[in-house]
Image (cartoon, rainbow, N blue to C red; front, side, top):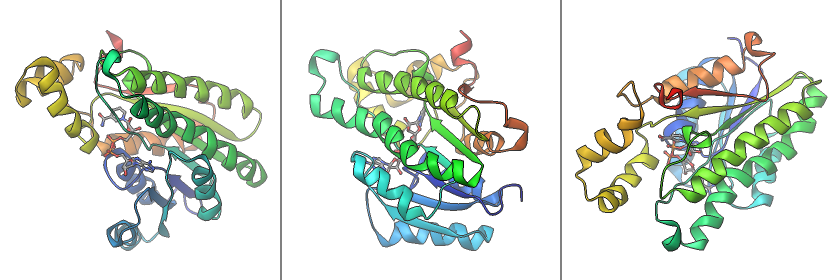
Length: 257
Ligand code: NAD
């Protein structure tokens, strides 16, 4: 159990990639703190289930990642944060002239600024405890663009800049900061884009999946949340101690093109 005794905070971890990463970190022995903006019985039950299955401590902390104070409160409420996974993210698809400015602000706040706040709150404790791993879930859209995703692409390019900067600021500490850049993963976030993209391109659901989404992904397969969790566990391992300020693509070859 390589991560025994470490505590991992994973933002936006009630579904999709965040939950997948939380499960894999717990399997590797880390105690996990799940998070989202809601506060339901189901949210707490999900954490209890991880604790039951893996034997680690797991809890759920409500905090809205669109609010800087909440981001910082999450780190305090976690009672220690050795591994920080900045994963919370939302998407909105529209041509720039029709892009709702409120959606722009929300995407920049949740997908980018939240990582600034949580990292600022967590890094001092990591230095004091002499170990830390910061993992930002970016995207293939941190390296390339697609039409109609102006805010998302801007936020994801931004988080790669933040990753490099924090990697440099922590380079002399036993702390690393890296990004994971997934291609398409079939999570609720991607499901939600399908109807809008069908409308935008006048296509069927099947055509949006095969001709728009997986068209960019040479493997012609969605990446899985388990694969992303495994990548996060690797970044927390001793073998990854000198990997910092960079990104790992898990995108079936998308960004090799
Ligand atoms: P998802 O919708 O399944 O999960 C998003 C999580 O963020 C949920 O737990 C949701 O409750 C939480 N969240 C949303 N708003 C929040 C807020 N204000 N405060 C706290 N939590 C909030 O989406 P996903 O596909 O698992 O995406 C997770 C991350 O992976 C995002 O940053 C996304 O941009 C990135 N990503 C996803 C894909 C993909 O294909 N699914 C590809 C590349 C990158």
